[in-house]
Image 1 (tube, rainbow, N blue to C red):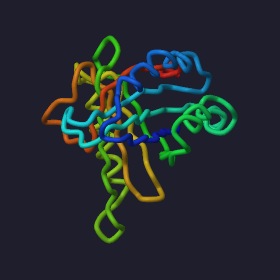
Image 2: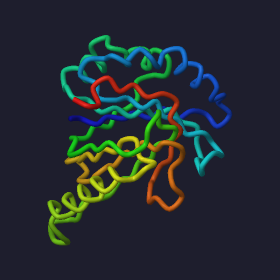
Image 3: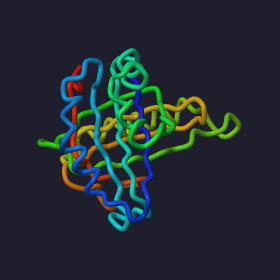
Length: 191
């Protein structure tokens, strides 16, 4: 499993209804994409939930590296983002784990938490990963969690946890970013 996200930071006065309409019009395009576990169409809106910026920042879980590559450079859809907004940097992580939570229905909110792994002199990265996996497993029992994923970035040595929430991100949840979910495509989430 590979996790992927790109972020399009938009001007402060950008009409986010343009992004909402774009997702309403095109969001279904990946609802049956082979190799895709899920795509969460995410936005942050300036002045909402503590966001300082307008941003479109979809998050993906891919079951197939070939499907991800086709999406990005093989005419599989990303060319539309490049055409309309330019080519943004794409963050990519190696998936470590994913859990389904107790929430039913489509998620309305998402969160991202990034945790630096310790330097070798400060601790064992494997222990930190095991602890993060235990925290991830505990989210399976949370009644507000739809899906949560943990992934690893070996370039910068950090973990990233994305969580999809039924209604909103709990205020006591330690997160770096909060998002609104406009649409969820999940053709192979259970694969």
